[in-house]
Length: 482
Ligand SMILES: Nc1ncnc2c1ncn2[C@@H]1O[C@H](COP(=O)(O)OP(=O)(O)O)[C@@H](O)[C@H]1O
Ligand SMILES: [Mg+2]
Image 1: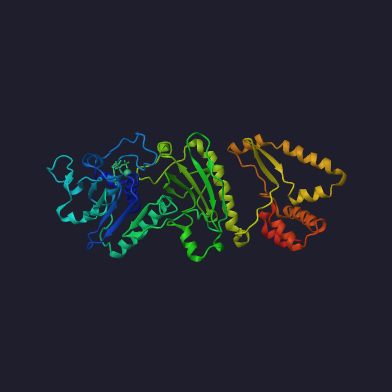
Image 2: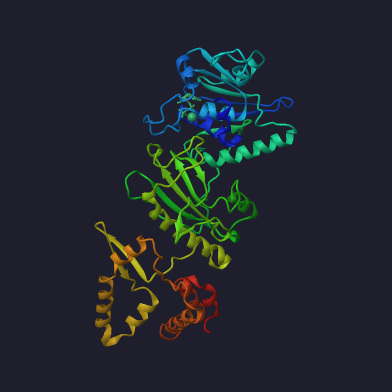
């Protein structure tokens, strides 16, 4: 059984993240991971300054299924199955030694060794006390913290197979560093919860998939709470077009898996990242949303509480999750909006990318929220409306009445139903309309701006670029007057 548990599919990076989770759950403020080469017999230690364990706690911690997965956990607990310490460790090596010390107490230490478990005639599950004699000094670092835990992985047969070189070991550390920078980015450093995570003594800087605060950031939605019960929060992001990034930033922003892989949903549980990218098998019109080049700038943050583990089918490795059916429709709509915006930013190159001081687009419709209800109004600021109102003379009253009638009869229910039923999303914004049709409307608006409002062509062009729906057609606007 112990041998079978090695095959759960951890990578070195995900296994280490699972050990770091335990440190965080134990209240650690710093965690140091050390990779020792040890002349091609490498070992890895993870030291934390968490609350530590006493004898009984450590003995329990070393058991498989140390805790019942059905048990309610404190809100900040990152564990679930009571397996991680063992399964993550065995996935990498054959010997696991854990030493721990609570504040003001003595050190305790226990060890599993798969080689000793499998010795014929050695019946039973032998959990050994203390480190292997040759490894005593490898636990020394525990003396550097007032209380805490040190995990030692040895006999790393799954890390260092035949032909494994120092360079491979260094590359592995690089991969681990990137993975941890991503997994714990919201917990790390001054911007996060102040966790100090170091790799061979070097602090790991957080990697933020959403580039929050970058001046070239194309779009971020408000934070939504999904309807349907538990506290699930979502925020959609569209990253800057590549022209807005310096080449180093561009490389950084891509993330460990590269641009294509890193698009889509980022699912967090207690601010710890579980899933980095992918469209969660969401489907539209019978086809799965796929990760592709045009949508690479779309990334969606999704926060779930740890009470929702079973609902979201969090796996033992904490690397996968599934969207419960009742949230699929809502997430699909958010995903499609983010994807569409991302595609436009991607496709329109620098022209479309909003400049940092970019002015807001003048929409034809505005949503007004008051007393919990939303009303949809036609914007009187939109050029098409404004110029008509200005020139309406005796018809002004009637025109205003018409606008009111339209506003009061927006088929909100109908649109909502059509959108919610799994048919095509209602279209607008000229989607699919032939170019001449768009151009014709543009020319009418252009005429209004130049002839009636007296704008110079360049000013008129600038206004058109900031006017819905023409803001979506910068290449056509550039051709005006056609
Ligand atoms: N670094 C640590 N510091 C304190 N306690 C720990 C540490 N690592 C593990 N433990 C204890 O061991 C238990 C089992 O850990 P684990 O096998 O990872 O399962 P889980 O994290 O799902 O509870 C934890 O619930 C915790 O009580
Ligand atoms: Mg754990």
